[in-house]
Image (cartoon, rainbow, N blue to C red; front, side, top):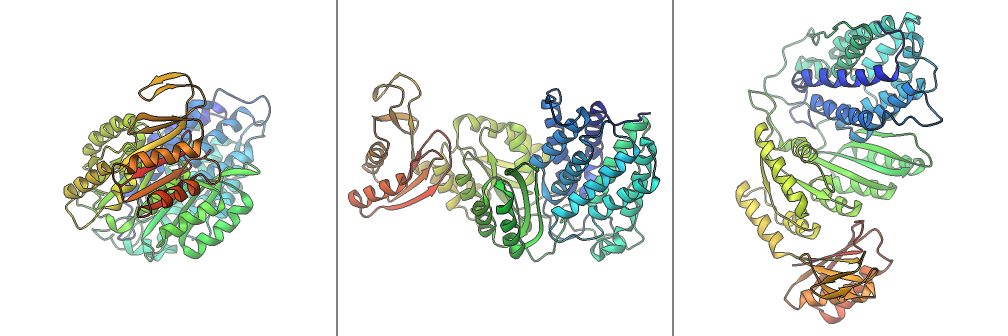
Length: 538
């Protein structure tokens, strides 16, 4: 028996909770309500808590000299990891429950029964605040019941209060079909609430040393339909789930909430509490993906943008097996990520691991996925992820793009009416027909095929080889475009890097208009590091 929740117990709770969610993942995924999904809840919760555990594993030993206690530091790491890795509506709400929990007890000398009750109440308040239109009969109702029961226990005995809270949560979960007609019709309880009950049971187990797992309650309603798939929350009026992380100021996020609330439903916007600029996790269901992403750009810097089309998914008798097609694209730079998201692709940040790419492939909910790595090193990682995806019944084809401009060309020719294999061939051909160049500054002295370069020189690389060495950035950018257009081309794509000087793409565009008047030019803010300009010629 533990009488306080210390840092070691927090670590065990996170690990035990993750293991329990993995055991119940399929069960929670099967709590089906709507005939179209926005990502299965059990899977989303597992991915969210996996990120929380990774944050704990990396930083738990680095307690700051001042600030929270050891247990408070651990809880804040857990909450921050959950926020950054949150998937789906349920994952975002869970991250806020953990954040409210951590904020309440971070400075407390010890976490006993009454502190746990206060932490649950704080977590409840944070979760309700995060949701634009709170709905009862969901995880919100379940966490509120747990907090109320913990407060009603009025005890400092930590295991007792935790047990009371877990039982109350389970009882509230059983009542969720009485509050949401959609749950009653399907004959299920709320999936997010079930996940929270699993986590509370895991906490009781850590505190008492005794197993407490309990089966999901069976509602007093008709048996669920045999062929539906879960949508976590929201109506069936909206076709896409959009989710991204956002670095922005709180005042800008207030405008973002209003904009997204007018576009769709199931809106959740939660932050990490940092000021003046923090990190926010944004989740919404919409019909206009571009408008949702543009609202994020207007508020700050969105990244890790993912878009799921609900209609691309279905279920087989053996469990939730997805159908339809999707694209996963690796992107470095907020602007580039926005372009890919606007094309309906799931975006993964640069230099991903095999596991991260695999997670992205699975999160699309599609049975056929094309991956665009945009880098030679990432291509091998993508191939490894493709092999692993076959274990889950997902067919993955890797189009060996070496630059974001090639990926844009490939996405532009996608056609859902073609056979998947034919579509992959067409995308590969389009990518191969797009020649690419990168312009950067030399970091050291070196001998290249274009001659000797010195630190600070401007290098123009075509298809990975240095073709030009210059001293003026704009002149070198214009020169490399000339060289590439000399071999033919009808369209130029320019992606400006995060460090590109103002007016760079305008100057190159004007140069092309003078020298190549029949060539079309498209310029976008790419936001990529190291390369002030990326060029594509088609």
